[in-house]
Amino acid sequence: MEKEAEKVEATEPETEKKAGDGGTEKKAGDGGTEEKAIAVECREQAPVLNIAACCRIREYGESSGNGKSRQFVYSRFRIWRAYQHPRFNSSFKSMKFLRNSHHVVAGCNSGEVKVVDLNSNRVIQNGISHRFAVSNLQCVSGHDTAMVLSSNNREVMLWRDAYSLSEGAIHSFEECKLARCSNAGDIVAATHTRLNQIRLFDVQTCRHMQKFTHPFQLPARVIDANLMIHFHPLDTLFLCHGILWDRRTSTSPVHRFEQNRGGGFHPSGNEVIINSGIWDLRSFKQLRSSPLLDQTRITFNAGGDVIYAFLNSRGADFGPGFLTLDAKDYSLFAKVKLRDPVTVTDFAVDPTDSVLGLTTLSHRGQGTAVTYQIGRQGDRTDRVDNRTLVETSDNESTSEEDDQSTSDEEDDD
Image 1 (cartoon, rainbow, N blue to C red):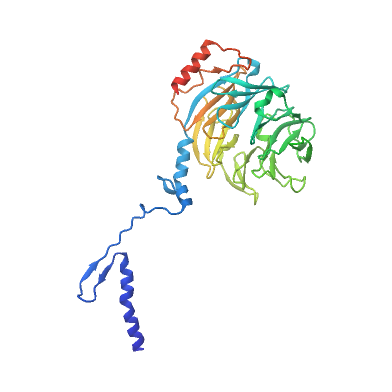
Image 2 (cartoon, helix red, strand yellow):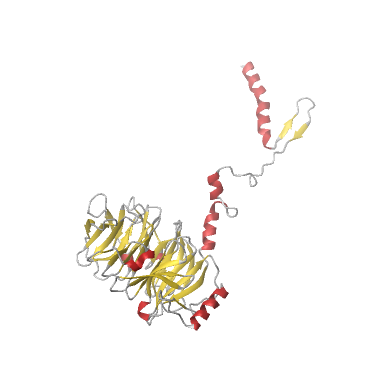
């Protein structure tokens, strides 16, 4: 026992020595003098060796720095330009951006589909196939082409390339309305004009693939685009009027949500936003509720981390405009109100997240396309006053007053 006690006592100075590395006092055995060793560690200045952590942690804000950066950028919007067509019956009804922020596809009240260059204010392509106003547009960009799907409450047209609209649509889907293309661009889903059905078509052959019978009567005339078809990011599921379908298994519905005004799927793939409710696709339980999303139409930015929620003049608390929210926690970034008494008919975000576009309808029935610069602070005098008339493809000239307004806007920028 005494030997064991000696061993324990012999190990105690070593323990004290190890504990002294953190800045405690050390005993020098020979002279009995004490030396103070202070180890200074600067963790803030130590380099981060993990490349993933370097990309995640910002210079300011640490782990929450990315969220602060998103809030800073997506809470600032500046009116860039507003576009109107010289002919009243050809005013803009809908719009979508192409590969960059300079070319947009615009649907007109006359049934025309146009490609407009925002820099030169010219129509570079014009396609005529619809008999009624084009209320819905979708662009799917490939390696060499940009396919366009246009539709309204009575017609659905498929265009091979946005830059060859003058050649006409390659296919017209009979007895279909309000179509939506899948994210991969290989499937077109549309509702039937007479039957209570949702039909899927192959894009390459334009042949009918599947049909799904909706358990409830769909409205004969859909005005709100929230009642349209929404595809899952993996294109395996789709949502229509509050009913979830899986096109791989059967034609029977997978689940029916309590709310029927579908807003769309979250880019993460595990959540679906229906009106103001956020639902889990795995358990079909409501995770949370965001009153800011009530009665809105939503879309996500290219990165999938910011939500744009658009409100028209009906049912909006603060009038027509749009909101920006964080897609992670659904916190509010900014509210942007349109000062003119208009109705928002469509919206678009360019793939580079630098320009936002809106199509509005005035009380006189005039459609206007308004573009905003994302991340640039606007002043209190930002109004859609100076409107640029888009030149037609047959080299028709606009008035000198419109040219002067364009130059004034460029000087302001």
